[in-house]
Length: 127
Image (cartoon, rainbow, N blue to C red; front, side, top):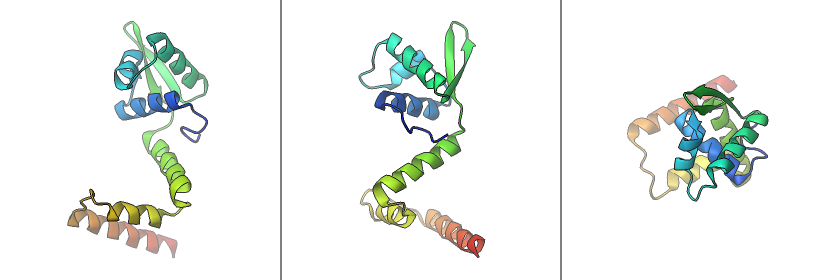
């Protein structure tokens, strides 16, 4: 499943909150959304996301707690693919170059070494 494709802005907001927390009740989602809809609106959106296969739930006390059906690393990969395609023509190089050139970005020597190691590994894997 390609996470966030075909979701409304509110549905994406809810999924972002649930992924960030790992799981969330309607109350948690309400607290995490700027300018939230009503509690009934949140519950409706959670049920819609569940019917679309993005969420599952369990009951904790009187509340339903929702969890994503897709592991966070799969959702992250899907989101990154979408960003690369939308803003960088699918180019990882362009995205990394923009990030490294950013004025607010401070990249430590240890992080640069890890990135260099990842690049070496990818090069060896590709041979």
